[in-house]
Structure formats: structure tokens, C-alpha cells
Figure 1 (cartoon, rainbow, N blue to C red):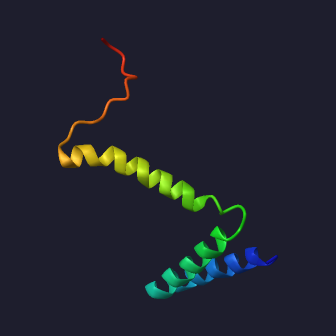
Figure 2 (cartoon, helix red, strand yellow):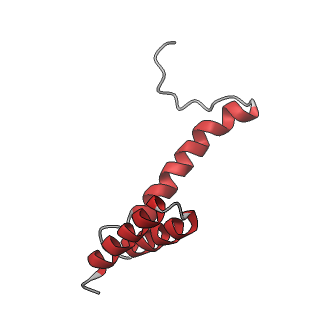
Figure 3 (cartoon, rainbow, N blue to C red):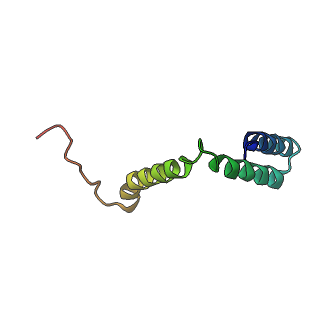
Length: 80
């Protein structure tokens, strides 16, 4: 699909127009279409992995303080 860039541009323009017209559902739909089209390109194929890695790191950092458990040590702390 050679014209995926044009489709992404039209989806983003559609989302912008819907947002300016205060049609939230239309803006969300156009944004999701643009995101799906972007992920289907070679440039966006790594996006799901990057988001999953970020969320995994965030979860690992946020869970111990929220549950009251000790933060696991990786042994790289200075001191003795």
C-alpha cells in the first residue's frame, strides 16, 4: 500500500476537524484509524513493543510503593 501516508494524513485531518467541531467520538475514531494505519507501516511496526516495554517498566516501578512491599534491589547501589 503506497498511499498509506496520505491515508494517515487524511485521518489526522479528520480527527482535527472533528475535535474543532467538538465531536469527540469522531475525533477518537479518526485517531484510532490513523494509529492502526501507522502501526501497519514499517516505521510504526515497533510501536506496540515500545509501548509494552514502557508499561512493563512503569508497572514494575509503581507496584511496590502501591502495595507496600519492598523495592527489589539490583545490587548496583553504592555503599556497604
